[in-house]
Length: 397
Ligand SMILES: Nc1ncnc2c1ncn2[C@@H]1O[C@H](COP(=O)(O)OP(=O)(O)O)[C@@H](O)[C@H]1O
Ligand SMILES: O=C(OP(=O)(O)O)[C@H](O)COP(=O)(O)O
Image 1 (cartoon, protein in one colour):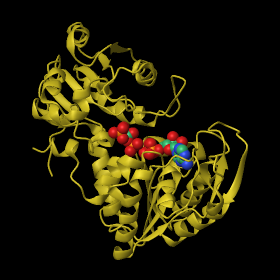
Image 2 (spheres, rainbow, N blue to C red; image 1 turned 120 degrees about the vertical axis):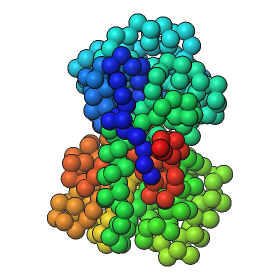
Image 3 (tube, protein in one colour; image 1 turned 180 degrees about the horizontal axis):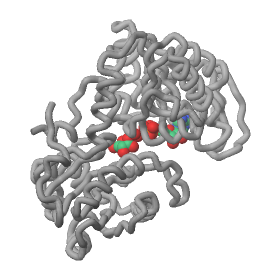
Image 4 (cartoon, rainbow, N blue to C red; image 1 turned 90 degrees about the horizontal axis):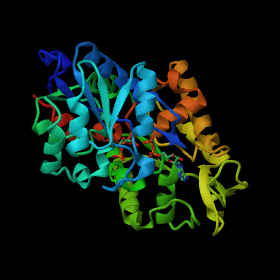
């Protein structure tokens, strides 16, 4: 597929450039706790700004479902972008309408403005053409630098690209090139590790993924849904019981494809979701009724390590446990360090991605030893499945 890049935009000086970025960063009490995604979009912002464009950033944050949710405002993120860019980043209270237009109208060449969360409008996720039109009204051209949101056919990732001349940003280009060269023809056996909390939005892609990989380790919140589908009582754990049939279908597809599915054999359970909560490690057959699985147990970690040893290529999205709250980071840190060691010694090609996964690898001190770290989680897995990503497709020239 070919697409235009920033090199193809003529006469950038003074142009209003709407840049879709992914600023869906891990946050704690209005403080950004991992800045990787921001750092990755800085080259595009800097280049456009240095070439005299008016740089207008569009982004989503969390899943506010079309409502204005204070905790999901991008105002705090604007400050973090400003600090890392070393330049003031203005903030518009809305991504469309009078406040957006007013903020854009007073911009000078080279200035940078971040618009409020696009998902505060229902039209974003519906990819409503009227919403896309309202976004497009503030720009002359559109640049998509959010590879990690390119699996979403939303107003700011797909709809808008139909309305304005559309170009790929530097990170979008770099991600596609790096993933192509790291995983275009992966050396087998290939191991996928999938964990995290976005169960309903990622479970479907596992059905195709099992046909592409030799082993699939399932951890984190995702594992609970599979365990429950197998009749395990997961107590009060994060679990999507209504997806039991989907989980069963995936396990059947894996068997047909000859992909080994590895589920936890033990779990660290607690009664509260908080740092330092009292916890115990139990077999998955003995989860207390009032317990929550917050990490996979030590025996499961050993199994995961042995699968990493058996693999020549690793793709990883989603932490194995609630790594933000100690001690439920133990399994994720141990697996990350093990994969980093195997990569350093040349035994493993390791690719990991996802906002929280990257934060977890940084927390483990392992990110720099991975072969490649993508900003994308779900998008990267869908790319691996061989799916066309709507946000990328819309850039096709
Ligand atoms: N057993 C679990 N119970 C609840 N939350 C979990 C569990 N395991 C992992 N998580 C949470 O999953 C989140 C990351 O999931 P996800 O957003 O899917 O990953 P990524 O952003 O890397 O794609 C983290 O915030 C982590 O706390
Ligand atoms: O964080 C993201 O994806 P990821 O958790 O798969 O890395 C992207 O910003 C997409 O967010 P979404 O999964 O709410 O559409």
